[in-house]
Image 1 (cartoon, rainbow, N blue to C red):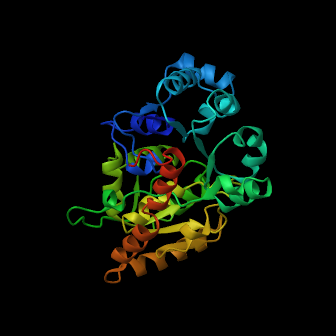
Image 2: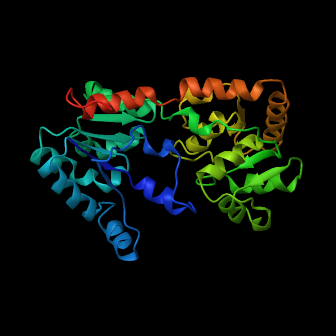
Image 3: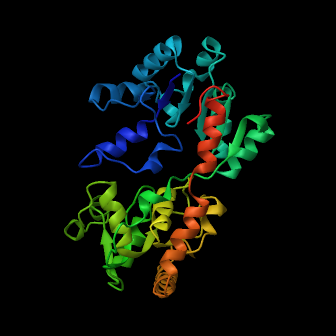
Length: 330
């Protein structure tokens, strides 16, 4: 039997790629099968405005989910929660025997969406705080804190990649752009900028060619260190994607010490913490990371430790247990 798989993050990732490809990391632990229904946003202006007016609810995804569950779908896995979470209670009322699983990131999101989340058969938590809040509200048996990751093989270099840059900045969502500009102004390090990052920091002429996730993976391998420059007031675990991808490539990470990214990610080899907003400390921690990565086998050690912890196997098994209660195995 098929699964309804709702993941509009894939649509966004593919739209940013020049060939439509994307890393398996963005499947969030589930590899769609040929008989599954992969549902994502349509990106026309009318539907974008409609979703905004409906508080994120995607009517076309809702209709397709109802149709699939009414026919043969075994259950629903919702990665991009706003697409459907307004109708979670209705889905369970109409299809009580069809498992429904989704994600929640933060403890305050649990409070905000609890009346909807409690309709789910299982909730995967991106942070321990979200798991603790669900425990407190009586959903300990139907929730779990799991590490997000994927098959490390995607991030391994198939041939030697020459190191060309000291630092890469690949993501700027919720980032400290003022600190990024100040660090670039010192000209202390050779910095590789992706096209989006280069535009945000006002250095479009310095952008490297990164048109898909394959090229981004190569850019990580070409760099010794990834900067994840976060703002103190951030309410999300911003930069987690960059951290996972960097470490799986064997690239060290210099990240703000005030972050909501869970500790199991931050205690991996190759993660260096600078004082949030402090340029001097950022540069010092970067020099420390650069010196460490020049040691023999340092980068291999980073990648190996990340592969062991962030391989995504626990997450995939948990998804299978929720959506596949005995009759179908991936």
